[in-house]
Amino acid sequence: MRKDGATVAEEDDGIRLDRWFKRHRPGTPHALIARWARSGELTVDGKKADVSDRIETGQTIAMPVPPVDAVARPARKDRPLTDADIALAESMVIHRDASALVLDKPPGLATQGGTKTESHVDGLLDALKFDGPVRPKLVHRLDKDTSGALLIARTPRAAAWFAKAFSNRSARKTYWAIVVGVPDIAQGEIDLPLAKQPGSGGEKMHVHDSGLPSKTRYRIIERAGNRAAWVELQPLTGRTHQLRVHMAAIGHPIVGDGKYGGKGAFLTGTISRKLHLHSRRLRIDHPDGGALDVSAPVPEHFAASLDALGFDPLLGDVLAEEAPRPSPRAVQKTKAKAHAKQVRKARRGERRGRAEAKAQPAGKPPAKRGPAKPGGRKPAPRKPR
Image (tube, rainbow, N blue to C red; front, side):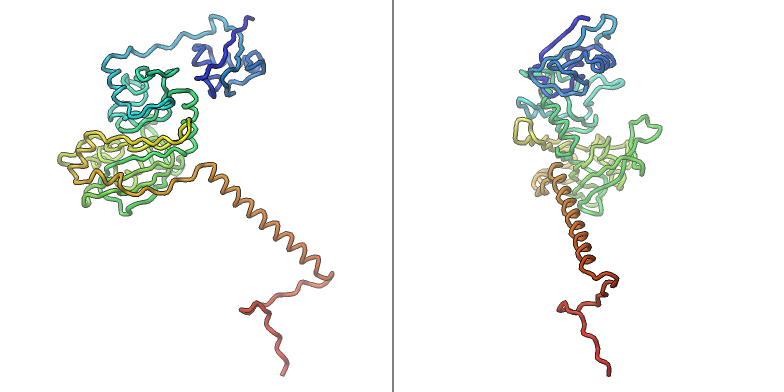
């Protein structure tokens, strides 16, 4: 069988081998690639490779040339971008560097495509390549009606870095929301497991004991009497619709969220019926060193509601920030120290027990110890009268 080969480019550094095939040999069936790996016909630098292996810049990939009938037809391409699409994409950029873009996603624009969803952020990314080596890539998502900061990776290396940060919860996301009513406690943590609601086709979540652990930290920024509250939300886990379900579950649905709050999620008067949930700030370690810290301005309907309810728009950023959460590595280190301390304590107890047993004369039961006096001495025996 004829052989094919390629050298790993810099923009592919750190990606999985199967991802490389998807990018550079589109249409090659995954089952065929896996068969090559099992038989040893797929190699990296002359060594047998697995589809899950990470590749590095400069390595040589060798594989058989697949039969013509084994290669699938290329997927249908998205519709060509119009001038309006390009203008929209460029207008969303609020941060740009060699590895990352941060967009200010408007409400109503989906992050990814789906059934009957032709306009979405993912479909606009060809307009945001700029001088980058490859097409930018989504690394997380926002609901269609949620506005605000959305991170985009400009290189495969950055995509892998950011994806890891989101998966290990070291990235910090801060949301602003306006909710109906005012929570009784000014700040706290909502800890309610979430699961897909049966019969909704996976499009709706609900609180259920068998669901996945889900935690949200909240804090009231300001209140409008008992009518509404402006709150800061921090998701400590990343479940679908988590913030919306949690706030509705404690009796304070996000304004405009009819899906989870029903009719009670809408305020009368001039308050917009749009969802009042905004990804305000994103903080994450940068693959090139340092940290990325970007804030997105609130959309028009949110700003108008803040004004109508008498909220001071400066208060959200004036409040003192809480202490940063420890990194996963620091948490593991702390747990390891605590475990080692318990092991040492248990061993000391074992050594003390063996020493006492060795010092005790054979056949004589251990002496009973009476209650100690404040000075640590045993009480003296009483003399007979």
